[in-house]
Length: 138
Image (cartoon, rainbow, N blue to C red; front, side, top):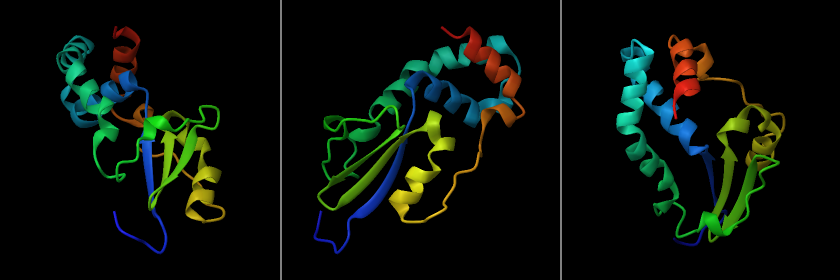
């Protein structure tokens, strides 16, 4: 941490942990999974380890000892902004990303900035398999 003329702007997404863990497996291994049984077995084998990685996302020092859990999160808005010691942090819920264009526009001081839909699981070759695994996974 050192003096800055302006704070460093950081944007970080967060996501409900179960959906994050399952979608992560599909993002990296989706094409290799051929059927629902094998896909569920793979998710079950790696689920807890994946969750542990996600649950420790904010334990790093990128935010210069900012405790993001000490600040309230605006669930209705889908995003919150925290300013702390040279950091201007925007945390957003991944599930609400498509509607957060105005929030990003304000944070980045880019009027008219919009967020398009990209990397959407429903449009991938494994979309049907993904939906079925999510439906069945417990």
